[in-house]
Image (cartoon, rainbow, N blue to C red; front, side):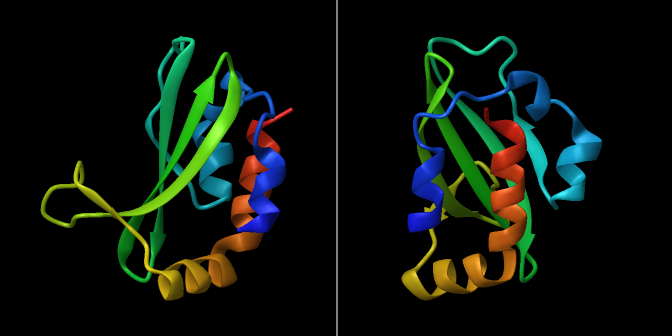
Length: 109
């Protein structure tokens, strides 16, 4: 999780989060992308992990990332999410860490 701290307080490039083809190259899909974002807003992205949907919530304030949250979407109601366990988080970062870092590099300045 430490490797993701460097993205806190980085400026989000809103034009990059809209490029579906580029996001797909990282295995990421935009789920909720406010356009334009409010002063305090959240962007939602999804990716697959072992047949389950992981939601990456990127909270921004004045365009800068303030929080990154990784959670599992409920299969019956994708609007319901629950945090990944420590072991799930470890496995997720082991499998998808490089892609996630590339994605975060792409969407931030």
